Length: 221
Image 1 (cartoon, rainbow, N blue to C red):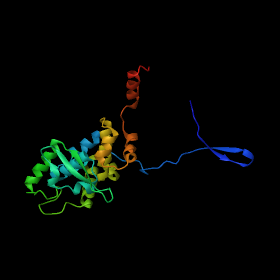
Image 2: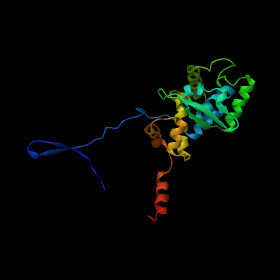
Image 3: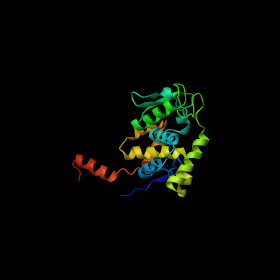
């Protein structure tokens, strides 16, 4: 069955004109989202020998955080007992919104080792080179990730060498793992669900099999 939608325009003498209606689509991302697949993520993270950068980029991927949000995290924001980090969502005007995200034992161990090595205090930034300093700059992160993308993944990945690529990659990976769209929205700190739904078209979750199972549960063959 096919349906065509028309826009009807009234003309003189009770006549009308039908013109095929093409709905305007609001694009939340003008360009295609660039992300790494799971094997590429593992290759990228596994290829970083520098312990500080390994911690930084593992944290960015796990949390799906914006780079500015990650660099604002302090030691006191980490709950080592409950494996969580409290992160301020920066893209909410005039509101102080925080989200509490679960961290793996692996990234927590990296943070603990670094904290002790640099003698970081509770009020210190995690991604600072030493106690009392500001966190490293966004530019320094951008330079480092581009270098690693090229060195580990190849020169064809140069344009993808950006912290936001890890955020996109995490969003798609979470959806592929079966995390529902509302949870992904909360993890990423989106205020609008439409921003999260953009990632659905990149997810390889098998819609065909899911539909068959759903039909079978209703006795539909």
